[in-house]
Length: 293
Image 1 (cartoon, rainbow, N blue to C red):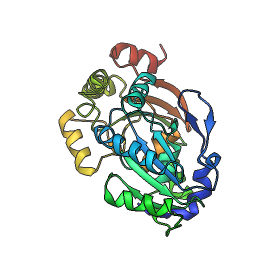
Image 2 (cartoon, helix red, strand yellow; image 1 turned 135 degrees about the vertical axis):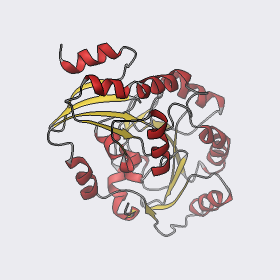
Image 3 (cartoon, rainbow, N blue to C red; image 1 turned 120 degrees about the vertical axis):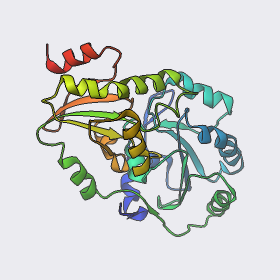
Image 4 (tube, rainbow, N blue to C red; image 1 turned 60 degrees about the vertical axis):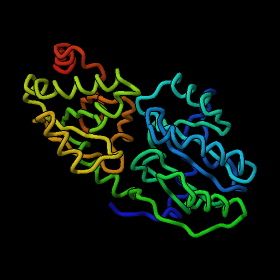
C-alpha cells in the first residue's frame, strides 16, 4: 500500500460528511473552522483499547479543549445508539461525538484499526497519527495547543486511482460477496455475544450455502482492521473455507458498498447491489432470497 501525503488529502477530508450523534445533523471537519487544530479519535464501543483510552481522551479535552477541537468519531460498524450513549455517560465525554456512517473518513485517513488518533493543524494538514494514548501523543497535543503548525506526515490512505482499481473487479458481472471480519466471532464474544454468534453461524454455514448455489460467482471479503495475511490464513483454516477470501484493502469495499453490519452478503450485478442479506439464521430462506423463488 502506498502512503499518500496528508497535505494532498486535507481538503477532501475536511469535506467528508459525518453525522452528529444524537441530533443526526450532517457535519464536516471543515465546519469546525480553521482557527484551531483538530484531534480526531476513531473508535468503537466494542473496542477494548478504545474504552481504556477514553479517560485520557476526556482528560486532554478538559485540558486543551479551548485551544484544540476534539472530535470522537465512531466508525459505526456493528454499533447501536444505546451502546454509544452508555460510553458517553460512562466516561462523561464532553467533546462532540460523530458517526462515520459510510466509513469515508476511515478510508481517507488510512484507518487500520481502532483506537486511531489523528492530529491536524489549523490548516487541516495531518501532523501525527497513532493507535496509542501516551506521552508522545500528549507532546504533540501540547505543541499544537501552543500554536505550532508542525510538519505534515503521511497517512496509509489510497489515492483515488488506487481505489478505482480495487473497485474495477466489481463493476462488471454478477457476484455474491460475503463480508465479515476474521475477529468478529471471538473479539466481540464478551462485548457483543449475539453479533459474535451470528458471525460464527454464518461463517460455519457459508460452504454449505455456496454448495446450494454452485453456479454463482462467490467471494469473501474480510475487514482490514487488525487483520493481516496470517490472520486470514488462520480464519480460512478454522472454517475450512471453500469460498475464496481476501482482505479489504484500506476498507475500500466496506466503504463503497456501505457495509456497517457484519456479516453481510451482497448480490452484485455490474456494480449495483441487488440484494443485501444480514440474517443467516435460516439457510433455506437465504437460498430462496438469492434464487428469486
